[in-house]
Every structure is written in C-alpha cells, then in structure tokens.
Length: 456
Image (cartoon, rainbow, N blue to C red; front, side, top):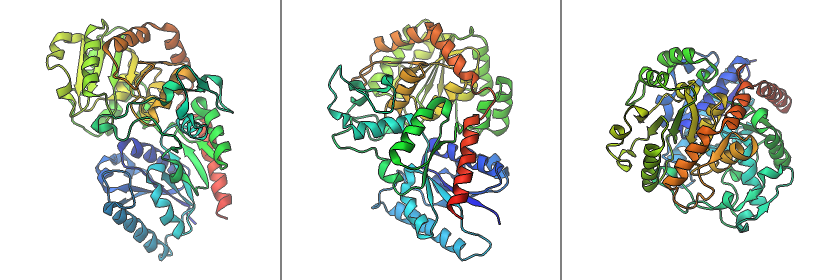
C-alpha cells in the first residue's frame, strides 16, 4: 500500500519554497506527498513541481496573516482542510497518511489532523540555532540582562551566551516588518504553542551548520529532532553557467528592472571578490531614515555594489543615486536573481537581513556577511553567522537605534577587506560542493524509520 505524507506550508514565499523542496525529497523516497497551500500562494508554485511523481497539491482559503482563531478566513481554511480530510477518510483509495508535517506558522492545523488520528511533525523553516536561542532566552528570562552582562546557556558554547544586544530591538519596525520590539518578561517564543503535541521536529538546516543546536532542541523539547535541509532550490547546487540556463528554463518570470543576462554582464566586468551585494528579501526592510543612511554609505564606499530595492521603498532613496554612482553600482528594483549573484566570482560580500533562506544561500556560495537583522529569527541567524561559524560581521552592536551611515560604511570596508573571513567562508562552502548534505540524507532516513515504527 502506498505511503503518504502531508506537508502544510505557511503563508509566505520563504515558507513555501522549503516545503516544496521537502516534498521533492519525499517523492524521491517513494512517498506520496500532498502539499497543502493557501490559495494566495498557488501562482508561486513552479510548474516543475507538478512534474515530480507522487506529488499533488490541495488548496485552503488564504488569510493575509498567520491565523488567529477569530479570523473568519482562518475559520474557512480550517473548514476546507477538515472537509478534505473527511472526504479522503471515506474513500478506500486514500489510506490514512503516515503523518502531517506542519510549518509552525500554521500550527492551528494540528487539531484538525488529530481529529483524523494523523500524527503531526512540526517543521521549522528556519534554523535550529535561532529556535535554540529563543527557547533559551525564554527559559533563562534573559529580558533583565544588563549592558556588558552575558548569560551562559547550559549545553551551548560560550560564544553563544546571551548578551544585552541580543535582547535589545527596535520598538517598532517598518510596515513590511511585522511584529517587532524587545521581548517582555515571561514572553515565550511565538512558535512554542504551535509545536505542542508534535511527535517530532524538523529543521530546515543541517549538522554542518546547526548540529549542536538540533541536539539542544531535541534534549529541551524531549522529542526527536532532525536537520533535513538545506531545503534550497536545485539551482543553488549548480555551477554559474548551469545557474544561468536553469533560471532561463525554470525560474518564474518576475518583474525586475534588470534581466539575468544584464546582471551577469555587469558582474563579469568587476574584479574577483570586489562586489558587495545588498538585499533584504521581500518581507522586511530598513526604516525610511535607514534607507537614506544606506544610500549615503553605498555612495561614499569606493567599491562596486548591487543593491536590490524592494517594491514600495523607491521613495526612500535619493532619486539620482543611479547617476551619482554610475557603473560602480547596479541598482535593481523589485526581484533579483540572487542565486546567480551570490554564486558569481565577483561577489565578495552580502549585506543581508539574515533571513534564513538568504543565509543558507550565501553560505552555500561561500559569501561572507554584513549582518543587519530586522525581526524574529534574523537576530539569532546573525549570531550564528557572526559568533559561531564566524563568516560575518554585525552592521552595529545596537540595533535598537537607527543604523547610521558611518556604521554601514565602516562595516562594508571591514567586510570587503577581511581576507581571513573570506577564507573561512570558502572553507565552509566546500562542505556543500557535493550538493544536498549527507547529514540531512541520514536525517531523512532516520525520520523514515521513526515514522514507520510510529504508525505500525
């Protein structure tokens, strides 16, 4: 009898992509997978996904945000999911699934799966370090850390001790940034109630980056935990020339001010390791004032750069910046071919918000960071990069204040001139030259064994 696994994705592209890759991994292991997606993301599924054997998708109603119980749209989404499961349970051609792997962002779906006796595995689309640090900050009540004080975390190395700067955050963030501000006494990580009742945890990471933190989370929560990533699209495991062809064939065509070919031609004209890539993803960004500070720093810095300006942020930056920096800067509006840029030999640094997908991509391509986290797990992703694997610098130690032009310019200069850091990034990159990490293959094997025993 065919084995099936449900995978339920959260509400943003950064959650969908890892879930798609996870489904592909299960398909290659002869599992049938049903990807449950909010209707708002249907157009974001690449056509190639439907070509994988043993994969299908099921839609549920979309909400504009993760689902509070009072949201009418979430109530409708719950009804959609329950109706789907009910119809399947009545059909002998659809045996009960082995489990549902649920993105923590949509943990509300657990109760519906439990109605049909389907066990739930919780999926973190970010890394285990961020989860471990958030858990430790809560359990150690780190909100009272004073300036200059550190608080060691039992079971984790000294360089990951909690500090005052780990807890200080801006009290508000720009409109794309969502909830922000420092944690309050007693605040638990928002994902804690979303994973309660799960039989195991999965993290979009691997032992080479996060092995210590995966073990920490398994020990703390008391259930198995696996790193099953890096759940990156296939093009991130290819050479530059293959990347160009792959993007031409399979990449969704998105609105952009530059084509892939134009970006590659510009990069080809720059010296090896000289280009700073500046991008903050699609969901968060600096404040209006910080955009201007960043523009000033890029203008004053002597080296070449690519700056991806998010939709809606154009008004924040000087309108004549393109002319002032001339061919030294390539300013891309809207979408940019990030895999191509990070993998190019001319790219030598990445000023990043340290969203987990961007963090993984830069590590795989051997590019060191100037870390500018803005919300959520990004703060501790930055700590992993800077303190633990040591392939990055912080843009400033105090992110509770506006980031200034001088800090940005100094950070760029330090990053682009630090040959030791570039060497460490290149050494780490070698671990991923053979493709999907061996430790994650082993983790998926361990999951298969676990779930087979659990349901028999």
